[in-house]
Length: 478
Image 1 (cartoon, rainbow, N blue to C red):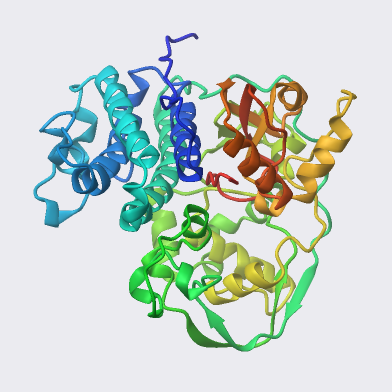
Image 2: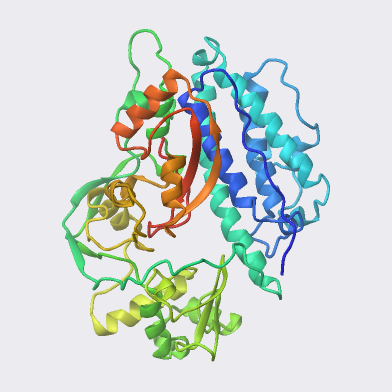
């Protein structure tokens, strides 16, 4: 079944030399539009549960952030796009005034999507003028800090767009797919045997640690330095960003522990289900067992019995229903579990391997920061070559940089390679005019392994690398 979808316009470009922060701003904003590109205006109106928001609201609210906290305060005589947007797209900032109830967001048939896209263009143009202004802008480091915060805020909403629209399409009786079916199998890889990495932290530090106190994006945490104030470099702001709940850094004692070398797969969780786990109260926390009965849980969200499949189950994905039998799903990490389900699974495993439990937040943070990606386990999906010339070296470069890559910027030649590999999803494709300064900055970023690709006044593409076994959080590399 085909529905009309709405095309989107990328962030307006300028002939002026772009700043590194503006480049990052444009990439993040383009990624948001790319996420909503497959949706029709009707899709963007759906709010399938109280915890979700319509995609149209996400597009507007992320724009509202920049208008409210940057443009209104740092651009003299800035003109609001619309006077009602200041309160209409406020989420929970009570100090700014009233806002509509979250449950009513699906009733915002007006303003239409076209007005929301015009709103984004209006604000994007104003931000571009602000970042291109010199020497006025360097005198406003607080504006740069807020733009960086706004970009991280928008990346949070990118994850929400993906999760909210998946639930919206799942609740539709037709179960329409967000994306068309994949043309080929993503991977035939089998998850490696589960192993353990041992840690002995003792007394350690937990929380955000900027590379230098003077580069911390939160000025209230920085040490006072004598002499004239030096505006922070945009890359320092980005590299040293953290949310307020990630600080202050503090001492924590951690007893020795071990962490699994990979995530639990769908096939392993199915074995838990096949052992009648959803009918065994001894595996569940008391509140969890109550929830299982009240909600009628028999499987994770998006799992559905399917007699036509060998496993007896199918899973709703962003590409529609997929059989659990295929390695595309059975060997990938199980997702959309509640805490109660995760705790019950850990209890089930502990019956076979005493002492097994869920890691604590502090243990996970310590392990992730001290020994990330050390297992040698293949990514999901695995990188597979298609025989295209140059693909081996390109994929090898991406694989080597994998822990630091989410978005990949390449030229048209590399794009033709990535288009043939299911581990990459194209988000943006357009001609980009680059200044000598841009060339130097990009070459420096590539040298520091923050990008992969080549530079030039040519067609440029942005891809999301889906080979990382992690949540869908976009983090541009440079």
